[in-house]
Length: 157
Image (cartoon, rainbow, N blue to C red; front, side):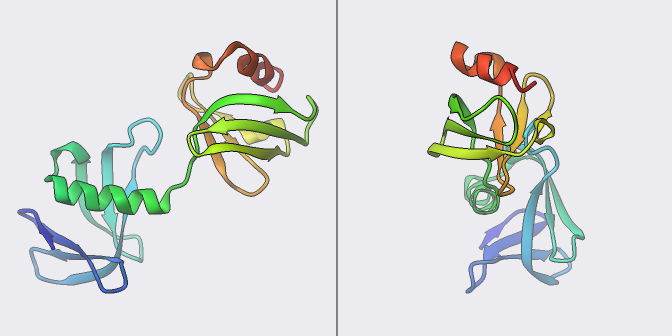
């Protein structure tokens, strides 16, 4: 169990987060939610109950004791899966739908791009690409990609 001045957070026997506030009420199945998962992933995190009610607000993960920060980061990592594209190796066609062969921080893979509308512009220079399976891939900085990747990407933007 990890205690802060205002609450306690621990994993229960089923591996879910359990929250106890100053009032002593225990909430099972607590979930950390990032307010800005891409732009500021370590700032603005809410601990919410299974009904979506906010129990606690964390301004910065770095302000927390290490054990609590690790517990929350582990929970976030188990819920969030957003591979980061580092290179676009090839595309089957420049018309959609098409298959992209890419390198990510989780290894090489393929994604099916149904349409150009599945490439969303975020705060420049970031992009979010949704594949046909509902997995979102992130390009943090499209200008930092290699020349070939940028050339392929430009054909779809």
